[in-house]
Amino acid sequence: MSKFQPLKQAVAENLCDGDVVAFEGFTHLIPHAAAHEAIRQGFKDLTLVRMTPDIVYDQMIGMGMASRLIFSYAGNPGVGLLRRLRDAVENGWPNAVEVEEHSHAAMANAYEAGAAGLPCAVFRGYKGAGLKEVNPNIREVTCPFTGEVLAAIPSVRPDVSFIHAQKANKKGDILIEGIIGIQKEAVLAAKKAVVTVEEIVDDFDGLHPNACILPHWTVSAISHVPGGAHPSYAHGYYIRDNASYLEWDKIATDRDGFRDWMQTHVMEAGPEVFESRVAGLKGEG
Image 1: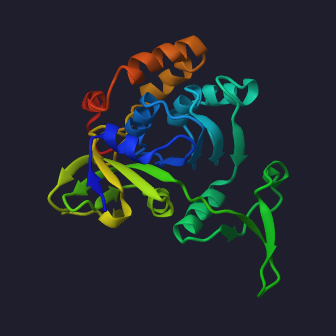
Image 2 (image 1 turned 60 degrees about the horizontal axis):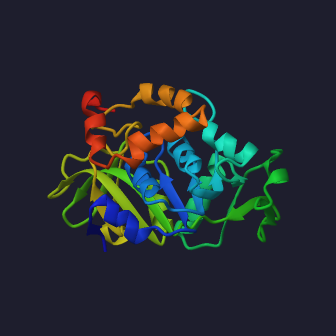
């Protein structure tokens, strides 16, 4: 059953060193505030799972939190590469990371399999692709009914998943509107789930057709963190902060500059700063 907690407490009670952890959001609702709290608490040896690692994972990798990555496509969207991830892979700074790369379709199927309690995902994919040559977790199975050769990969079943959403009601149900991405499956596949939200309401009304409600029994903890997806956007609340994504490319280029920025804007800050960061970005998103 979901509990309403300050973000610091929710992270401390649900995340552990060595966990397999997902911080999921697709295009919007990326849980930056939760990731920053995990960074402040100094967790180590994490397996970071995400369909599209972007700057939030660049920050976590650069702070030495990750030992392994399971992902599909990594980049600073609309800008270019992730410089801290590249430094870790190519130079082992601040520590070496193991990489397991998949396609988007594979990751989506792996989360769905995890949500269903299955050990693996079976799907059509990787025909003629080179990823299986460098990823030993991409296997082949033969359909016992048709004889068709299909791709198979391990399911994704995180120890804990973190997502951001628009609303929680007082019963602890979660409302996600706009692009849903893989957040629902990431929560259902995980042993524990922590959700940060823009607001807490008595109940949901005026729902959009493209909405997802996660019932309270799927969620371990809820934290009220307005602006908690910044610099990504939250549909109906604030737009994407494109300038921050452009700025990150410069910040992440230099190791010392990266550390200085993280010290000022993450280590010495708190989740309450996120609301002020989106003050000038209000809009439909």
